[in-house]
Length: 99
Image (cartoon, rainbow, N blue to C red; front, side, top):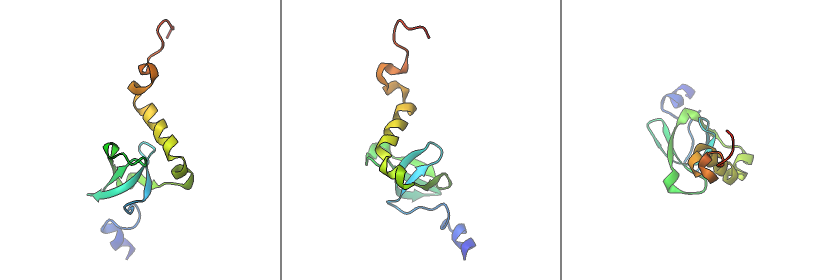
């Protein structure tokens, strides 16, 4: 039975819609909003539809309690380090400093 569940894509590595998971490739948290061909469609916990992304099911794990509680801080930190252009000063050293 267990091998049948795995062959059909059920069991380990599958997550239900509405479940909070971590994309282990990036460390980003998201809510599962759908499944397609071995991929999960994830939405940021902030609910922004614009930030949805696909994650291979094998690269997702259930989020721990502390991760869910701190999701807003973790997401802001991820965005800060992922997109250097949105940092104050554009991520470049202040003018006049020696780099």
